[in-house]
Amino acid sequence: MNGKTITYWITTAVVTAFMAYNAYAYLTHDPKMMAAFASLGYPPYFPNILATAKILGILALLVPGAIRLKEWAYAGFTFTFVGALCSHLASGQQKEAIMPLVMLVVLAVSYLLRPPGRRLVEAPQHNP
Image (cartoon, rainbow, N blue to C red):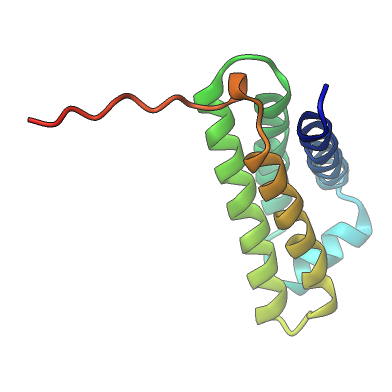
């Protein structure tokens, strides 16, 4: 394995571990996590929806194949981090906004360093 591949797997592991931890905290209704959602004005059922999406995204990133599904997982995680970042900033929680921003950067590194077997191959364009 070269450095690019190792960095891809490290960043992917960091993202999926972070998402797995959050999914667990959401599904168990961890009091700190529920208080954080309440402080942002979200209803108590919202963490269950996010946890389900995060688990599906983790599986999509880690399971071989399903390349188009991986693209959707990266997009979904991007929306999650951007949404969390904006929610914290809109609620005046600048300190809490740092983690979604950091994870967005880690996710971007994972996405940009994907091995060829984990990328969509664009169809050649036909010029009439």
